[in-house]
Image 1 (spheres, rainbow, N blue to C red):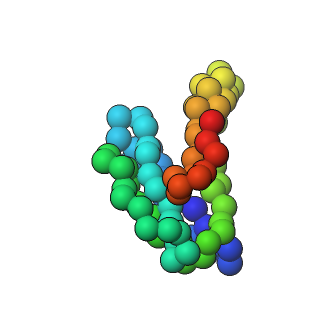
Image 2 (cartoon, helix red, strand yellow; image 1 turned 90 degrees about the vertical axis):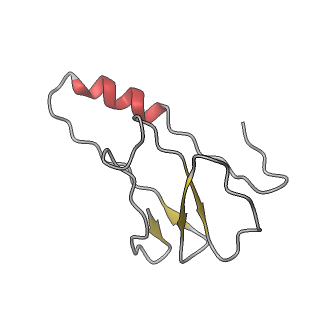
Length: 86
């Protein structure tokens, strides 16, 4: 994860995922107060905007399908009141 100046502020990878799943909350100083849902990790961003970069290692040609399946399972939600999540 990088902030709006492209400075890294967080990392989630194979060594940080629990049971193959990572669930986390990213917030900044402008995020309204909230309670962190149980089981989620937190990352505080220095800025209210930023970027998530996804990087996968393709070990063999047949791993591309598994990588694509994992990529399609990624979900992002806003958690503040009034957020429109699907």
